[in-house]
Image (tube, rainbow, N blue to C red; front, side):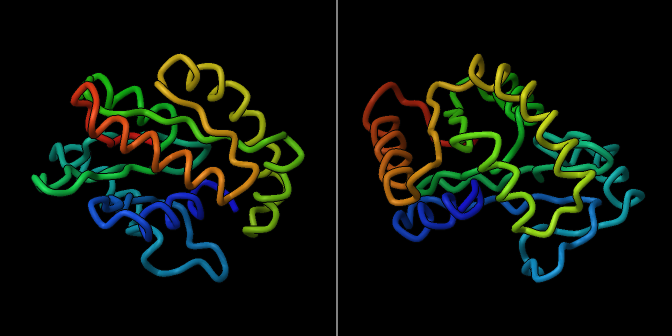
Length: 176
């Protein structure tokens, strides 16, 4: 029940939200849905970077990830499932974006989740190490932090944050 599961449940409950499907150069994990990402090779990804086709993009460990330029829909808010590098880029381009940092309740839980989704052990260890640096910067960038321990509670919390942003200061949900 990681970040992706949380976002899926939030999308199921709020039809004014839609998820931007990110591009990646990494291989599809066993059992991962075909539409989890737009899987491309490095050459195609880099061509899209050169053409200015990404709102944000980053290298994470050995792979590239990017959010294509979104089509703006007046009646819907876009959700981006991105890392700290991406959030920094989005907030630089769109300071009105709402950044929410989602964290596992502990490193051991993060390790369990990474292993459960099929990540190889060397990747798990590298991802955990990277996560330590990302958390520090993420706490500086994000307006809100959710500890994703209880899925139902986390969904309710994220929906409340989005509703507050819609009613409040004019920030539009966007980066997460």
